[in-house]
Length: 144
Length: 69
Image (cartoon, rainbow over all chains, first blue to last red):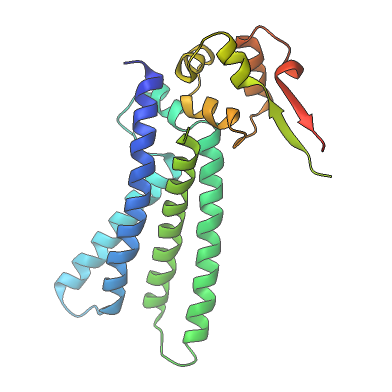
């Protein structure tokens, strides 16, 4: 199998994964935010796990994954259309975070919102939106 | 007045009987790059446009042009 074929297959997989990871990340963190308390040791473990997961997702979003593949395959996967899709996805994530900041600010007039809760929501929505947008744009690019 | 970059990559490729993957191999890009350019989803850089023209043994203006309609 040539590098172009390998890159094509991995790009399709990455497009599906980005969408699924974005949805799963937002959905699971939505439950976590609802019970956001740091009283038990398991809460600290969950906080660290969330941080690590966030780091992995950011690396996936910014560098396109396939870290164990050759440079040639990664270059083909992160070609000009993918770079453009990534920029658009990051802009989408940025606006999602701005919208979330306004919502948190408005909500704070009616309900006390801790800094930790607000940051959790903003980061989760921003990264999740960027991942979902990247997946959608990549799928559109791959459509015949 | 809107401006768009149009191309005849698909026509040139099909005239030579090449698949998108075959053209991608020749140029050293992904099949997705060829697909997005053919479908006008993506406007290539000057470097990429020159590579396409080179693959078709043609001038870049013959493959890519600006539509000002």
